[in-house]
Image 1 (tube, rainbow, N blue to C red):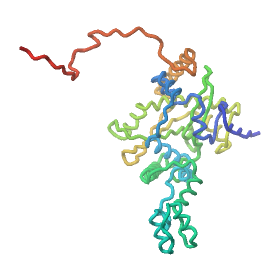
Image 2: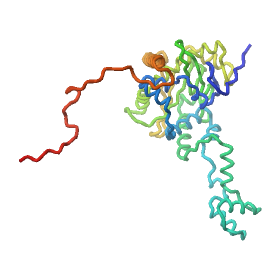
Image 3: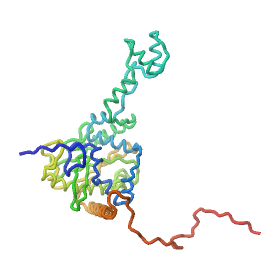
Image 4: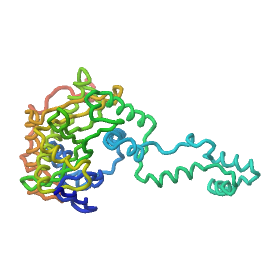
Length: 374
């Protein structure tokens, strides 16, 4: 007998499980450790705890806005993208509509009406006339009410994203799993929450999971990344360097542990939300192996997509897994020492005693005014 997935809880800590259709806000709102936390714990654990307890309100950068919009376009399709990101109505879309105060006054003047008052008063007076054209403020207000979660993009950003997906579609490898600029035949933003052997709650969110198909016997985990920094002799080297610099392999190692945990969660039928296909999880999690695939989009070079793939049994992942293990050990150490609600500081050390070997005598650009000699 085939079981039905469970309903996603509306609030509170999410139970361990495999989630389809979990919102981004719900995923990030759960305190389980994700890949970003793992990387920061490996780098600067005390700073990670400080930022967690003292979060800063910052305006989201253009790079992050663009990346999220591109993810939406590729993973959820053009309709979802336009619902959430495409530009709001523009005056040029509605020929003859009244936009400015001068437009409204000109219309009132044509009909012999008074031209005094502020803009709302002028609009109200214009609407009393039967032939009144559409008022752009009303059009925009209605659109905004229908799109409460909309994030505005510039015309340039929309064009770049459509160019990016068009270039992806031309790639013969990606074309096999894309349609109309979006990935198909898999599951987008598949989220996994699990508790590891040491009792730490963790989470992972795959951009796109693809089970074996045709002659391909391995599952694919597709990870979308955009970048502009150039280091390397060609596009491929630049993309590989970005993986190294941003520690994307450490993220992948953490996600692989979630993939393995998902097999156990499937056996326990801890599955939530609507699956894309009833047999998806069995096929995706029981494949003979997993390849990790980065689709790296170079924004500074004509929206060129670079595809990098790795066998998850490669030795590179062994190194990344050791870093993940060390980060988790650091997390356990500080949690045992200070707990979750106190700032963390490193264990006491002997003060560093400076001497001539640590203070070189080279000229640091500091000049001293010398007294005049007799």
